[in-house]
Image (tube, rainbow, N blue to C red; front, top):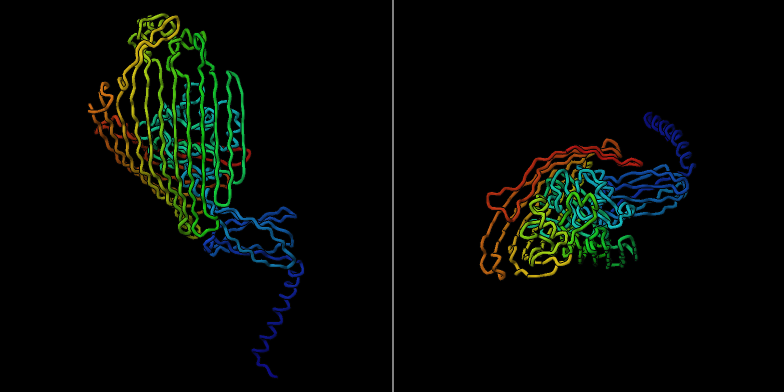
Length: 637
């Protein structure tokens, strides 16, 4: 056989290459190292990119991590023979864990299918923050108080005021000492009855009538909550209608993943007692939880002549969930939530003179012996969640809240209001003496029944859309809410006579004789928001639109049948609320954030056509450190 010159040189060159590669390959093979590779899919067969894959050597404890590429593929190379744990982490998907025994010189392929994490998606769509781990990336001031923190505080009465003291930018005003009717403001907004913030439970407006009468004479029982979220600045325009201060969301007990029974019983001074029980379980396609929270005390204030000054609360909650299999191509779930809260608190507006307060600040005059607040709250919710297509989800909530309350309390003495009496003690010394227990004429003490009924109802929905383009991730949210609420005032006054220190009923007032009116509100709200991640940057532009119609109908105090209105007032408000938040990760634990948004607070139903809404332009800049042992957030606004 003959070879040409070129063929001879080619053959010689090939031998030289083989002589170099062969020893290297032999050495690589002889050390027994191998590789693990694979791809990650969703239940519909689509690839999932940017999944964090962690591989841990069970013998050495050494971990290494990679992310899946655009084709959903990953690969670990040069691995010594050993048993390994391979785990995944991807937002909106359940984690997957697989044990792999890597033999010498093996190169196994491991394909993984991830199920969606429906609860994580719902928390993102409905809640204010979602999870504690999400705080570090939020382009705005946010605070998440988890269940462990709530339980560690060991508060006797689970007072929301005491819990929120740890949150910067929240201003509170104490009133009854128990936090039954909280006064919470944010960033300088008014605190009275928490009427200047957006108050929610499980992402649903929970004030008695959020538009028509937002004063929170009802507040969710804090002791049954598993987390509390606070969000301020531009990041809270998603949660209207009030965006001047911030949003407060209370997260109720969730349905457990398996059988769970928890109980807590506490006894204390003033005959105080507290019972908290919850029971729940999950099955293949059905899950549930039932809970009760009972709390009562005789009170710490000292009523002249004796008597209780405490309260009694009975709270009940139940949730039921039906859901398809996590591996279903179209995942769906329906959750029903039912709640009822009853409260009786022997609380008053009647105060003390400076002299009496200095002598005994816990004293209460005899004129407050009839004062009592009674309320009944019911809530009904149906939440439907569906994933109709890959990277698309829809969360829809139908809700209805009913609230009835009557604060029966001393209004005036001898025709003079209690506020006037305390403003001029010399002029009204006789009236003050009656309030303290001096005998009086019939009807000298007027006790008003501040009887009011409320409802709020509506439907809200959020469509989530995820789009990943290379290194850029976009998480769009499109939401709307149609809401109606009403406050019905139907108040009267009863007359009492003070006899030997005891108030005796001497006349009954006619129903509606002190206030007889109905306030209605109807609102459409839309919002669009995009959370865009690009490298270390996160941009969150968005806007909110509110269209609000307000109506107040007054009736004569001598017209309990409400046949003919005496006055009708209407007002309408439309507003666009833009906002932009920015977050930058300097390090994995240190971030900078800032934002600008339009603040808004609607007028009340008693306003006329020329009354305008409250608007402002709000800025904030901040720094956030998340780590151990230091966690710090500093914000200027």
